[in-house]
Image (cartoon, rainbow, N blue to C red; front, side):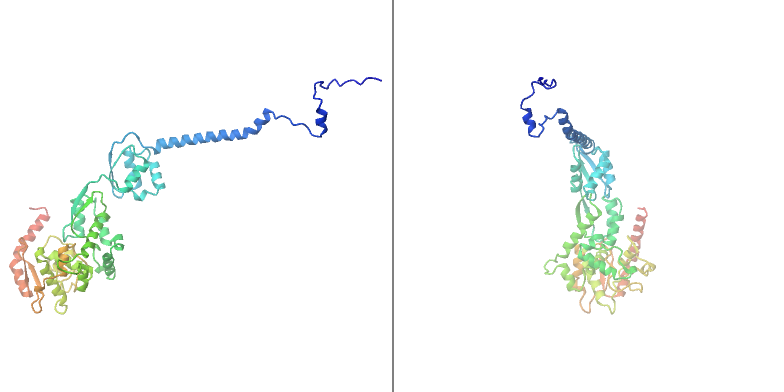
Length: 433
């Protein structure tokens, strides 16, 4: 019998257990190749590497932007630079000023930063000391808080002067305002102050009830309490006015020495509103030649107002002069006295009885007190004084009489002197000496 040949293709060193392994019906597991491992890891590694590159790029861009746009101009330079931010400056103007003074790196980025922080409307005018080592946060915080290197200034508001005179003085004498436009607009309408101060709301309601041609010229006239106030030189029109209104509020709660009632309570006792009180006080302030005569002038006006049947008119030249915008002149001519205005209190047919539309100036505390406490010696029944006259103007003297005849005699006596004073005032106003 022939011998079976061995398969020459069989590895003689093959594991002899292989048939047993194969006999279980399963193929033996293969060891993973390096190629298959790489195929599996490649997407993950690609993602990691790509992400790292993106992170590095973003980090680089952020670092570049931060370094070139947001970082201080010079972190090592603390030199103080004085910067003035004018009133009502826009964000663009502020950015221009900061950039021109080398305090920020980029104007547009600064504006975006402020807008994004919702701080644009909160930046305040003023004179500031800033430095190149300040961050955006430092600069914005400083401009918001008003941490200014501002000088302070004392401003004197004189008793009896008008809001127009105050405005002119703030511009020309103190230079704290560039012009009077906004100041006078606030004085005219009251602005938001009407909602803050009850006495202004009362005056406005009273005015709104009148025909348009009979309303006062300035709602705040009379309520800007005269005094000397200290302000920052960066003070706005609102700052200037608010301090005066706050002082007026305090005056309402003051009392005459020895009296129990506050000024406001005393006005109510007399049947006067706060506006009536201030209006009468402003006329007293203007008509009396000095505080020594305040109570006497007040008594004459009270006598006229109380005697409506025979009088009732204040008959004040000062109110009509205010209505016509006349200043620096003692005498008004007939055509001026008969011109209808909301302030004409003459009894010549053109005026109205009672008080005028509103105050004609801003009275001080002494005039307010006089309006509430007239000199009773001039108010006795059967012996009331209805007239007064500033006689010796240069000495500040006045005389008080009962009748119109006595008044006319005094006028004739002093007419030439008044004419001389008026002529000198007119020449001075025209630039003469």
